[in-house]
Image 1 (tube, rainbow, N blue to C red):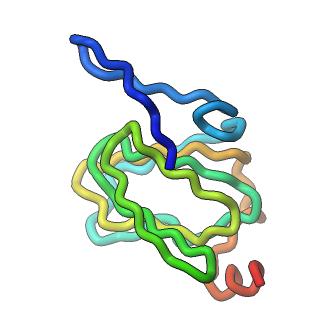
Image 2 (cartoon, rainbow, N blue to C red; image 1 turned 135 degrees about the horizontal axis):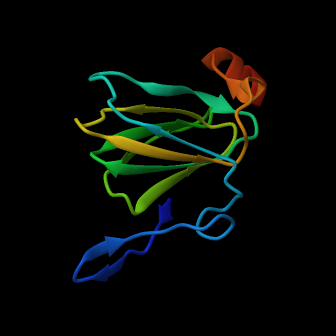
Length: 127
């Protein structure tokens, strides 16, 4: 988990992150997920070398992580609480509330060769 400490004053709250400090890698790419369709899953893949930091900026969602041996579900619902996903972890996003906005920070530029998109191939790759 990544815990961003909010700066609070009478105007509200501010959170920030810094590459190689609060985010443990250089950020080479970011993307946002929004207008997520009801009862859908996003992701359903693993990366060979990319590290991700996910933050739910609005709404809430569940991130399901699978390292090939164990599965864990983590609920994100606060913009200052993020999740670090290391390479070779199968993951997907589910149970998004209406209006959910997810920010993803990535350690690598987009490269289709970095993706493992078939679960059986993922299991074979990690063994």
